Image 1 (cartoon, rainbow, N blue to C red):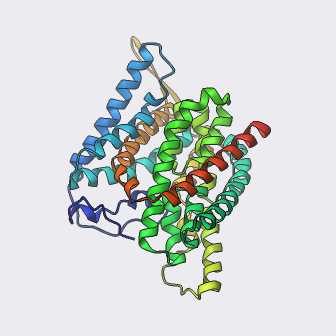
Image 2 (image 1 turned 120 degrees about the vertical axis):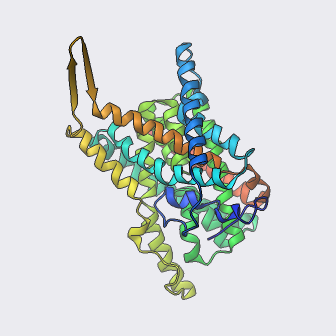
Image 3 (image 1 turned 180 degrees about the vertical axis):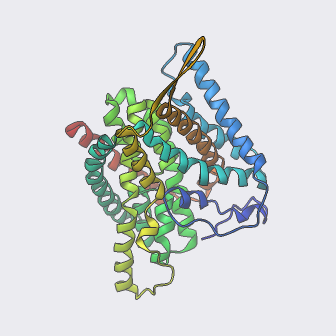
Amino acid sequence: MQTEFPSESAETARYAWADHLIWMEGGEPAESRPKEKRLPGVVMMLSLAALAFAVGWGIRETGWNRATLLDPILLSMLLGLAAGNVIAGTQLLSGASFTVRKLLPLGIILLGARMDFFEAIRIGGPGLVMSLGVVILSVGSLLYLGKCLGLDCKMALLLGIGTGICGGTAIVAIAPLMKARENHVLICVGLVTLLGLGAMVLLPLLSGLLGLSETQFGLLAGLTIHQTPQVIAAGFAVGEEAGQVATVAKLSRVCLLAPVAVLIGWWMSRRDSLTSEGRKPWFRLVPGFAIGFLLVALGNTFGVFPEISLDWEMTGVEFDSAALLKGISTFLLAAGMVGVGFQTRISQAREVGWRPLAASLAASLFITAVVLLAVRAFF
């Protein structure tokens, strides 16, 4: 699918605005494009990530620990969002795309160095069960609300899948199976992206009022916020444990994309005699970074990453490889977040009508309330 920003030049428009979503959740990569200079954009993304870390360090030095939105990862996305909606340029977009496609998945993989594998499985098991419930609630509520508001059935189903699984990526992956109209795909992806962005900002701010532990908040964020980068940003804005739990919970949702795609493909083939054109093998929908994350977590659990002490005459230096991987992963995540924010266009909101907005917002609030009650009751 190639969707263009109306305000961008034909050259810049080659960067389909949903490409980074496809990469992030394990879908097929974007079509090959002519090579362009990425360095200016990459340097800018890295510079904004470094600025976010500098601001975060300055805040910590003041002793003020309640600046939720100034967490380096969340602040990185907000800086990228602000810069991307002010500055235009093909080379900058190319660099932003590179950080999202290459650095952000690598950061998520290395994030496993913060995790105990068995802890990840412990969280991921209940998270997978709750994820199934979230998908069912999302699809059911959007189909019902869509019918009440007169939305096209396929559009309502796309919104339900995007809300329940992994935002715009699920929509982009499922749309060809449903032969969905391109303008409906555009509206759905823009809507769930913007709603997820709002949740990313609001949930950490409300964390204190909700009275949740970090584990509870991590599950709430991982099960309700739409995109993986948004989940990671919101989780780590509250705390280390919240970020870890949110990441595992979100990855359990992402892994549901493949079976849901198979189910919908089967259903649509029976309903519309859909040919095999446009179908993807189920394993192509399983994100590689999710597998890499669990492998690194397994390595950390069994001590694959050693602690090394170096003695140099007057100075003793202790080198912890796991801690180094944690630091690298945090910076890569921040750089990738800048790229995600840089490619997100607030102007997308103008293309969304009130009916899909009302249906999606109502469904998202309903699902958030149900998940909040569940995590309070069982965790």
